[in-house]
Length: 144
Image 1 (cartoon, rainbow, N blue to C red):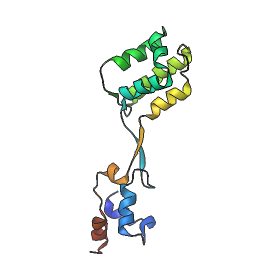
Image 2: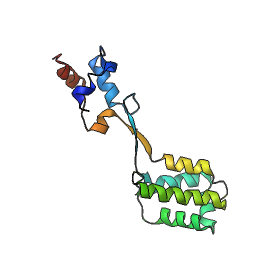
Image 3: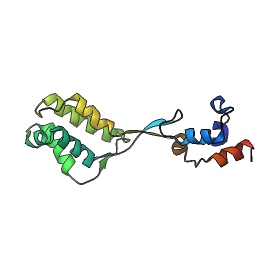
Image 4: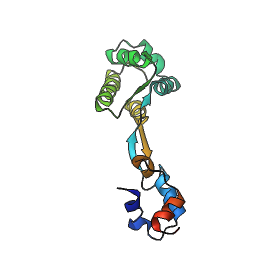
């Protein structure tokens, strides 16, 4: 949907142009959408250190924990969880650690938190690659 059609929706009828622009630019607004972002390995390492699971991972002889540590320590970077294969492998590895129960204090809630690091929202403008200003809304509406 283009911007011209979007601003014709009933939700924007009679709404001031500045408020329409604000809503469509707001990643937390009513018109935002869920999306994914890469999960930085450094963010996972930091989480594991803060929660006290880092040493448990390092000392574990579990295949899943060793695989997780190898992956976290191998190259800086991130996991592109928009790729379903990457998301599946990361989920499977973390679930293996949970199932092995060899890392003290690492549970399903930790796995869920780590996976949530790849969740975000984007504004309607971001999702559609559109720059929206109040003046643009006014111009589209024929107000200026």
